[in-house]
Image (cartoon, rainbow, N blue to C red):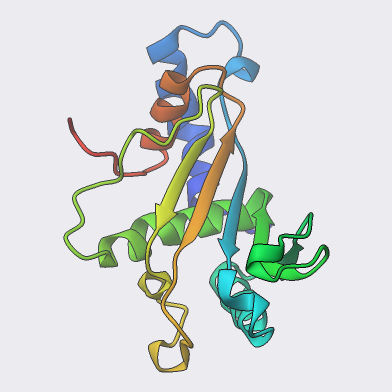
Length: 183
């Protein structure tokens, strides 16, 4: 039998039943699911130093286990000495098994390492069932060696779900283990 991530199995066995009971879905296909997780990181100082983008790419690749790609600027901005097509960030899109593995590592080992952690804010929903989470320090991920970090910077993590409303998406992400703050 092939390997299947722990959270994927938990989604199939527990989360689908819990969400069906909570929202009264008549069909299993109506239950929202996690489509993808996108990690993105802007490197504004990359205009002056091109190696900073390479460091960001290496760190995202190490964190996710999937090769990161450089994001390019879309237009010229003279005030920032930025030209169209210059690399100014890095991003990774995770789907399938890697997505569930990353979410498991994020919830169980990375988020508890945040200083004074009291849960993540529930204000990051966009109205269409997607959630955005900002992380201020990339050193919370145990995959990174702190001695090899060039500079401490943050990243954005976007959870794209098939939910129609923010309430459904929050229930899905809560069932998957994301620790939201209690208001």
